[in-house]
Image (cartoon, rainbow over the protein chains, first blue to last red):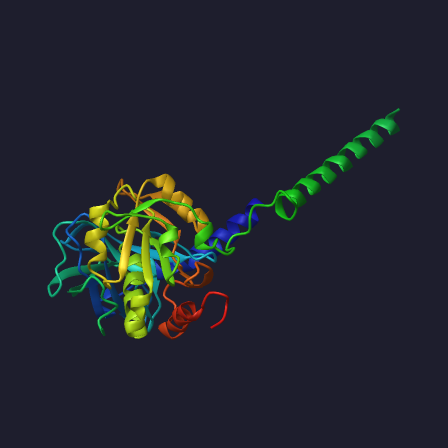
Length: 154
Length: 208
């Protein structure tokens, strides 16, 4: 039982290890359609959304985010179970295959901005940096839309 | 003698297995089974809870009988799913147009600790003006959740704060307070809007 379990674990872990061991090149990552919703003051957490495009030939792994607007920014994932119950948890590392796009979007992966340092006002932008496993960062200016915004298109 | 004790053990083992199977059946499929999840909400007329709306008025399910209604659960410290639901609802209402004035639209918080009457008033003010916010003592919110056959759960976060898991569907009731349908989280508006219209058309007596 145990060796089988170990083998199964190894099979699960190995591809992840291989992906991050390869020379993940965050220089090949671009960010599109970033946006966020205005906050009411600073007591509630904010959320930011964007599309992360891996234009390189190697997988890249998103390991975290940094922004001066929040003391605790993290990639979180909202999910819905079969009974329609929503929950939210830290997403951990997010791997993006070569040529693939990962969307941070409402109801899924999102940049959760905990402990806001200042209110997010509609019409302003704030800087946010995505951190990758190669140590590199990709910066983006995130426009703040209205609190009831549905995306950058409307 | 030996044979007998072996037989005895065998019988005991057999009995134990039988009992286990019976218990399993009792708990899973038999009379001891938990109420199935996802069952229909009670009619509003069979619900009983007392809350306060975002303008400080005492409210309850009976106030929603007489007009079609749309009810959902959430909390204002929810950064992702709840504002999305609120803005989805706002866009459905815009599509329903003037008829939306005949609907009662209620957002019930599952986080009364942080969502006071004032917090609800501030929050709902940013969305469609028809949306009303209800809060109140936790025991009353629990009764509401049970009536809707919904669930909620407080979950500790790593920052010392907490978040709430909760049913994210929107519940539709006709003017008699009978449950009509749910709209799932982020359901496309081409499905959501006809469901709202159906709840608005269902007349007393079931004629449409």
